[in-house]
Length: 507
Ligand SMILES: Cc1cc2nc3c(=O)[nH]c(=O)nc-3n(C[C@H](O)[C@H](O)[C@H](O)COP(=O)(O)OP(=O)(O)OC[C@H]3O[C@@H](n4cnc5c(N)ncnc54)[C@H](O)[C@@H]3O)c2cc1C
Image (cartoon, rainbow, N blue to C red; front, side, top):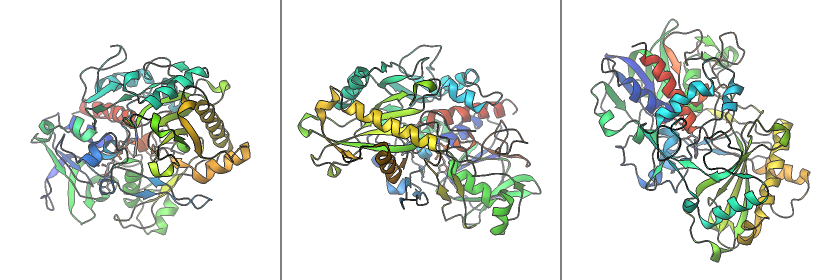
């Protein structure tokens, strides 16, 4: 629905952003028929199961330009600007992601160290969100909105199967279910893909039946500028075009970059920064100062083309382990085996990537605005590999990737190494090559972290309420108090499920 004009109707809740978290919030809150919900999304809204192929096809992670906000990082010291894809469509980044559906580990929640946010307390929400095609009832859910399928060995391409076997051959365990007690090893993913369609939260949570609810209004292609306040109480939002909408409570689910930008434009951020932009200060809080993301290194190989039968699914398996044996509680390393290398990059016109990512990085980046204009994207500096420990772990990961590539049966598929290339030999050379080409794994979090009101880093409390103000929450990846050691989508959905449940119990 796009024909709402300046409205004097007050809603119970306005949810800003219909992505992984926002779709959950709008869906769950509108289950209460006495609550009136307005969901505002910057991108387009398609009917469930009617998304254009460029974004619904699970074979096309990243989507297309039309449905991507088009963020880029600030240049690294090597002058490299990283693309930072974020979905701009109902379903948000879940509509353009890799559709890997794995949960954060118990250790991730231990690292968060927040009351109420242990793995045991999150397990009911991980189960609530999914309809799993298999697995143990203690671990998995069987009637939730998101269909999740455990890929089998037979679903993998022949190159991916060879990757799994080579990894087992150098001593790693074969894993059946990465959500299970032991995830340290290699195996096929669980994925939210049905018949080749990436099931985003706009499909799973905002079904056509949910969208027919009389108490839910979806306003698409509408950019939210900022939150309106009466003293310290949030009372509504204003769009970039000047239209205003009012509600008893505002929930920002604009994602790690989007929610931070809205908070900052609304006067919630570091006092000095806001003063420079002449933004009146509502709350002096460290918005955007503790940004985390997973640094990613492409180990790219040319394949013997005649041996490659299929490249679909492009993403299907990984090694999940610890970089160093003295750190086994923390599964801080992913090596993913993907077909996501354009053919023209390979001398054989067939390529393969072992993507190396450090998933519990220490380095912190930042996201900030340099203008009040809501049509200009915020700035992002991921500051990857600033911490020496992260670099050391990345070098180790790159070496493990090379060992796997050199091991049978994968070695038989490999014609040559494209990147970093065989001229890169020493640790120092590897470090240079990694830093020059470091990319984002597209899992940014922690721009408005949860924590106690007196914590130096926290922006919101343990239920997503913004400190020092009333009637304003943030619910999305930005409130993670730290990164998690896995791709983020399912955990974002679970966090939203939990906060929606907490709110619904009060209604
Ligand atoms: C290319 C890619 C691959 C990924 N692969 C995986 C994967 O395989 N598995 C996995 O678990 N995770 C993956 N992720 C990460 C995962 O998808 C995200 O962590 C998750 O979707 C974030 O959810 P969110 O609710 O925080 O934000 P989003 O889902 O990004 O939602 C934010 C929403 O807010 C809207 N919005 C933002 N600003 C405004 C504004 N001012 N006004 C109105 N609307 C606004 C956006 O359009 C968007 O719909 C991937 C991400 C990307 C981009």
